[in-house]
Length: 536
Ligand code: SF4
Image (cartoon, rainbow, N blue to C red; front, side, top):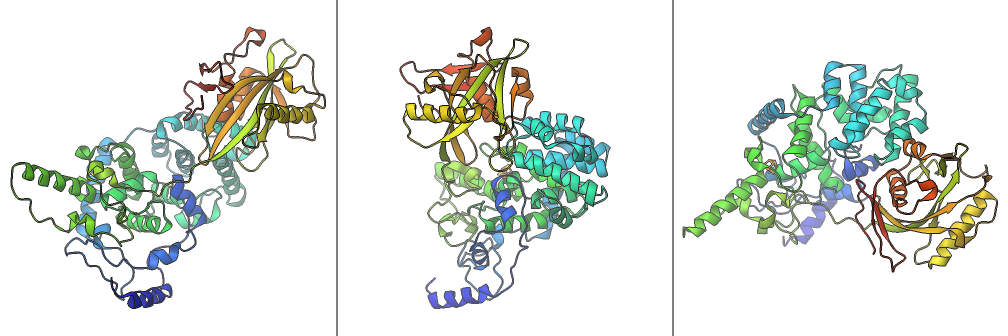
């Protein structure tokens, strides 16, 4: 802006001013929620306090110079008109009343407001942080059948919780849900905290999002929520194109959600905003034509104007002088606008928003895993599974005996490492050559690109397992599927399909087998279990 000295002095002053927005806490679905649980990243607070120097602002031609005022974002990114906020609330709630989906937890919560209703809601909110509604419904119904109250959940074992949670991912969330239920029963006399602040403070695993959802839906507290759907809707409503996973932007979105939430129907309003993101303002092809709040949406307005200009141009009319909303090129320094290097892209329309910084590519890991098979006492085949450590990735889940491998090992070396590992388990020699190579199974965790190099070994006699090592047990095929095993292990099981001819039986999950006979590397994946990468 040509005033570097002033800017430096202003930064220095802002460093000592109180924060404009609410701070701390955490919650919400997906990546932003995780970040919020840990609090803002170092340096983020300073970033949030430094005022933007220039932005296109509705109502004026856009020079937004630093002043002594607090670092509020430009009006374009705010809901500062009370009449507009009222209208948006009314339109959204009317749409929600007409169009909301009939979800099992909604029916339960409606029919049983109070302690049990809160438990129903809580479970659904934690599960919905994992995956989409369609997947959650079956898990939710089974969970509520088994543990209809917090008291019942408090008495469950972690093994039972893991068994039911298996396949949902982020297993620590199921574990913490049960720990929190125990705390409510044993330390809080069975009474749930009733405000978002207390919920977050007192219950393990309850972050800012979950606390806000429970407090607003169950107890009517006028507090907003921010999850992945809300982030998308708000970023489009207010043309927020800065990295939507950055702590400073997330702070602004929480401010916005708290301003918007309807004071008389906060729970319905929050659900309506999330429902809008899940069904209308979807990531790839939003249904703007059916959107109940399109007249309040800056991204939609911008697209409409571009279409108008284009058609006027087509008919030879001189395009009108664009108003400031169209001055995308002027945006460069606003902390909520798209960065100058990635301006508005007309071909993307409203899906210009939200934007996220590029994710780090997942870390590559290789693991050798062996399906050990024996004939059980009733003649049916049995398979050995072992329990993973109680902390870390897939904590407490069961898997086929596995050993992590260094990258770029030769095949013989990988095979030998697995044989040595099994030998330590069974206290008897295991010949590396006796291991039958099955193939490679790839599973993508959120941050790990995991390749399982799968072998099998038939055992003729019984074996003694070293009890000093991890817990282990022999299971039938049926027991394997009922156990707390991860989706990755179910893929490994599915990979056995074409090769497991032992006793004339093949594993239960139908497999698609795309083998390359000339190569050691084969792609195996189970139908219904997605595999997003292959090497053959
Ligand atoms: Fe989302 Fe389109 Fe509605 Fe805007 S108009 S909120 S982009 S669906």
